Image (cartoon, rainbow, N blue to C red):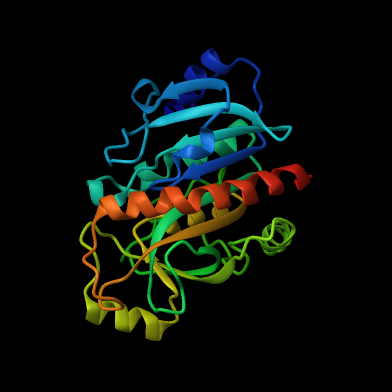
Length: 270
């Protein structure tokens, strides 16, 4: 509790009585969401008990701002398990968001498609996930003040928010898909054999994030929605060699469409 208090006290010292309703986590190549938005910026390195974002394309800052009338925290870059962090550390910001009063959590990521049914540049609304990381962020002694020991996962990706996302995309004439996201630990990309297996398991897209944050937010009774930008075809699906630079490049193109959908949704949140 002292740890939470130190983090919260520092944030309050910078933001005053700012009471956020919404938080959004920006994935690789999606930093342009903040273009033209003014607010209070705090570097992760300044916040007690926060990690640093060490991956290219992740700015490493919290932006406290108002978007479409909603007080919002934008997490510009996330923490990854493959950086050597504990999952309890990578998901620590989610617990802080809850304590700050956040009700809605929007999660974004860059992902690779498991088949040619998805095109590079597609937006996939995550309907469910497969946790292939071999661990869970809730492992350890449970804090009953935060959530129950065995949280239900049947509505992890909130059905009402997903309906709102589909309706918003339709109003904007932007095509959007729904599918299952599978998370691995990374940092190596998957082998062709692994991708064939993941496809058989029902995964439409594969990445190295999102699932830990979604599990913790669901545990905390937050309303969660998540989107993947399809930045590449996974290993073996096409003959292209995978690289992080290509992921960032493709993500920036798709980001403009996703930004419009999210901001349209913000207008309709109650």
